[in-house]
Image (cartoon, rainbow, N blue to C red; front, side, top):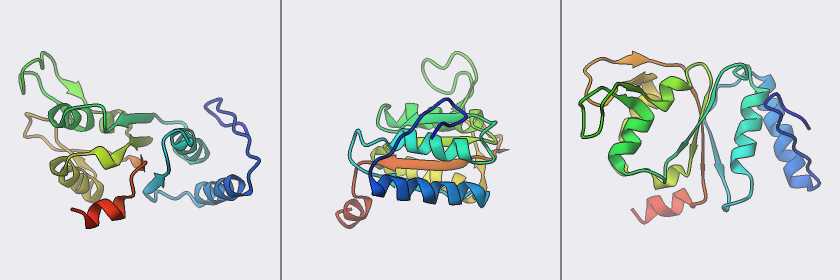
Length: 162
């Protein structure tokens, strides 16, 4: 199967063929459902997320990846929402966040299980309202972004363990 991004995916296993059939159904339904992909590291969560994007009506818009495990809490907040000049040490210019960059497209939140609790509450607000607020700004902005998240953690187990 070849996708708009140039990605080519071949599946021999019946399980992966079944997953791709589900992906194609979601895409044809013009769904904006938020998706969580779980699985061990290296099983292809990001290519699957890209395939979902490529098959969706958002395919002509950006697919933006945010590595939730690769930043400190402060920098991750800036990666998600952006920041204004002078809002923290080293912020010499205004910077749009990845959610703004993904407007009308898809944001892939890789390793969402590594996201700090405070940022999870900020993301929840965004998911409910579509509003983003840059770090250091009073202005609120609306964006239209489909969210696909992935993790290698068992999130239900982590929730029970607090």
